[in-house]
Length: 280
DNA sequence: CCACGACCTAA
DNA sequence: TAGGTCGTG
Image 1 (cartoon, rainbow, N blue to C red):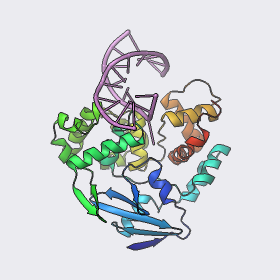
Image 2 (cartoon, rainbow, N blue to C red):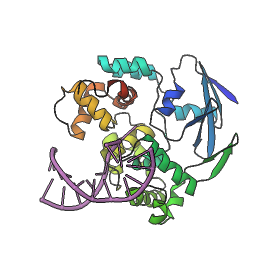
Image 3 (cartoon, rainbow, N blue to C red):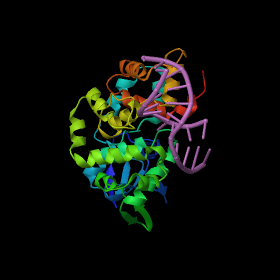
């Protein structure tokens, strides 16, 4: 077991792994476990100390974005009373740097589903095509590589309870397997071009693309708008009128919150239950 | 650009 | 009914 001292680095592990951005973390005996890459990670936070097993320190810092100047970012997005309250309540919530391929498939699986439903599909895919890894007498399955999924028939993938997303997953797998540099190419592009490129994949619309750009490509201008965020934007920021188009709402958010609008989205999402319905 | 229904499945 | 996308008007 290794330790990492946070000192003055604001971080809330529990909130970060359970807020709905990543889907594989589970808590057992006081530790959080998840298959990350080809290993199982085990992490616990005790005050200003992180205890961990699995990653190197460098991998740990990178994955949880501990090198990102969070307080500076939060100051920058702190532009109104509601986001201010969200920051007060969730300070330490960080955007995880996920693997692009796993993130892409995860959010393709996220359409018309809640968090348990998404998690279930990813677990099915991993159990069917990933590698079995044991840790502390528990069994985990790594997320399958694109090459592995590209070799599968659509009907086989559908057995993972992914429903109509089967063809989307298979097409994405073939695309990624044919061009292993796809993620690097997207990473180099500015936000809008990267989004256009992602949206050429079937099953990837503006919302899924924004999620992947924010959670895997460090494009912090990305502001994913789901039904929760749309409701908050409409009732709390735009006078409760009719629905805005996705692009207009996103443009408003970037104007209002600035270049780190994606962080604002996460913090607003973090307090969605408290303000849902109120003011509708 | 906006409205609409279909799409799989599980809770 | 659900954290959308796609095809059609």
